[in-house]
Image (cartoon, helix red, strand yellow):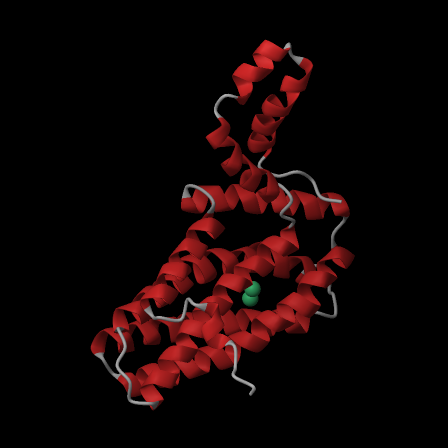
Amino acid sequence: MKTPRRTFLAGTASIVTSGLALPLSALAMQKKPAPKAAPKKKEEAEEEVSTNEDLMREHGVLNRILLIYDEAIRRIQANEKFDPTVLVKSAGLIKSFIEDYHEKLEEDHIFPRFEESGNKLTELTVNLRAQHAVGRILTQKIAAAAKSGDTQALSKALTAFNRMYRPHEAREDTVLFPALHSVVSKHEYDAMGEEFERIERKTFGGDGFDLAVDQVTELEKQFDIYDISKFTPDVK
Ligand SMILES: [Fe+2]
Ligand SMILES: [Fe+2]
């Protein structure tokens, strides 16, 4: 169903498994560095990432930043103190990972597939492009307000950002991305995944998604919302 990506990793894995055809002594030598076996499993799993899964898990990073923004809005309304540098860093991650990378992929590689074919979803892509542009302005406002300490301006920009991005990404996940299969061939779909992978490595010098997840995790910890059990309501 999917073309294997990160083929150099797949090559590494095959060298290890091909040991089955070697004499037992050689196999034993290959098996010696047991501690190195665990990381390879994660790399092998990453080979299965398809174009849409790639884009949708990037939305997962966006969603986690929206949670940080939600918490900042709540604290401003409740007059609770918070570290504004977390908001500055969150806005920075939105810019580097979402605006300059994820949205650029959508604008350069996804939206044109619908627009060039005169697809009925072109009206949607026009709106999505406009929202990307507004999002960039809001991100600048969020960073500026967090730096200056203007909590009212910060709350207003955060609220506008979250209100726009939840329907934006939900529409992409449920309407636009699934429809991609109807405007590109399977070969083109797989080739897009390869291209996204190449752009990701060129942009971030490695796995940009993993780096972004690490960064948002650290920001959640700094903002004391990393413990997911805190989101479970008491229904007693
Ligand atoms: Fe988008
Ligand atoms: Fe998106």
